[in-house]
Amino acid sequence: MKKLVLAVLIAVGVTFLVTYTYNQSQQETATESKIALNYITGWKDGYCEGWKFVKGTDCPAVPTAEDCGECPNTYKAGFSMAFKAGMKAAK
Image 1 (cartoon, rainbow, N blue to C red):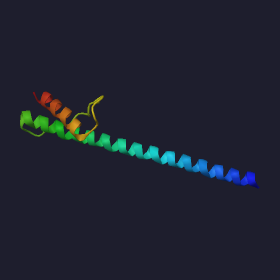
Image 2: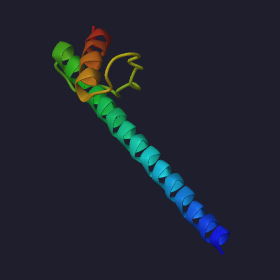
Image 3: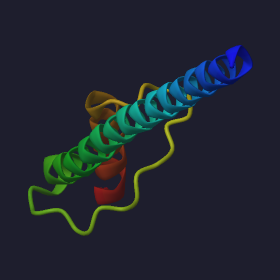
Image 4: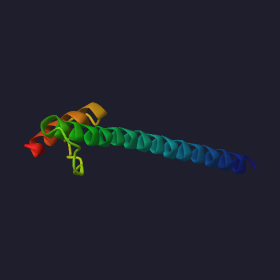
């Protein structure tokens, strides 16, 4: 009987640990997705603003966001890189 109770407690403990670990990885993935979305949004806004800065007209289709490598994946970083790319493309 003691072995059965011990086996049940171990099974419950293992189940709890697996579930907790799975939830943590899902939260980290969701956070990474939000950060990437901010970078892409910044890229789209920055490219159009860079184009408008040079041409003064509405921007054409925005190209796919460049990989920033080691830069922070923030709205500001995406905007800054895209602003420069938009200005370069407009010249």
